[in-house]
Length: 230
Ligand SMILES: C[S@@+](CC[C@H](N)C(=O)[O-])C[C@H]1O[C@@H](n2cnc3c(N)ncnc32)[C@H](O)[C@@H]1O
Image (cartoon, rainbow, N blue to C red; front, top):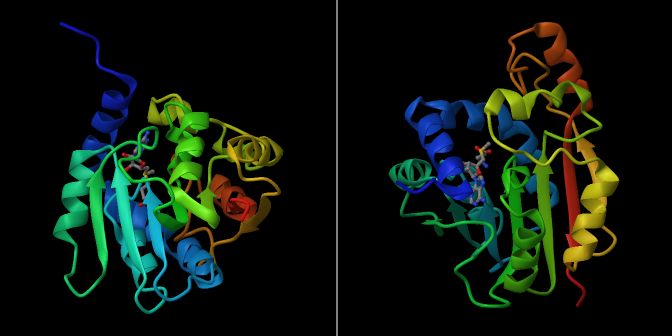
């Protein structure tokens, strides 16, 4: 029997998260930071937005409602996450959810205005390839807004890869900016966004230790924003 591919291993991990009901927990944990970022993204009417690693699709639906006529497409490698996204979908929202990988986006060149991702890109099997794919599908002047909780300046996250059991990219802020620049997004801006609900609701430490949750909360989520040159 052949070995599973890296993508199959990631998909199996997140299928089991979905089956264990963890998609709802991610929505609860990530929602305040995502709402803050989407409010400040200045999505314009009619823009087409890609949501990388959409999980159960809650952020895809928020993006599609961020401006009149905006549309959003979520992609995820986990069939169980995509099934949850479709089950939670409302036909009044211009969103859809596709099974697919960051590294091989099944979209035409220059077909999106924006790309967004919450807590997903550091799982990329091939991060440079994933970022280059995003650059390919974005229009000139298109913008990326990527949010990550797992980054070196948030030291309490150092054990996460071990806890999750997957290889994960643990990069510092300047390393993220350099990887973005190499893929065609020069001059990335970085900001830390803190959950307004405090440590109890947002970003609980996986160990359950309230003291660690406090530190995790203080470090905040990393919001990276950059444009493809016009
Ligand atoms: C931690 S979850 C976050 C989900 C969602 N953004 C949220 O905040 O609820 C990460 C998601 O990224 C997806 N993912 C990880 N690596 C991927 C890849 N290479 N291609 C596509 N999806 C991937 C996983 O299947 C998972 O659903």
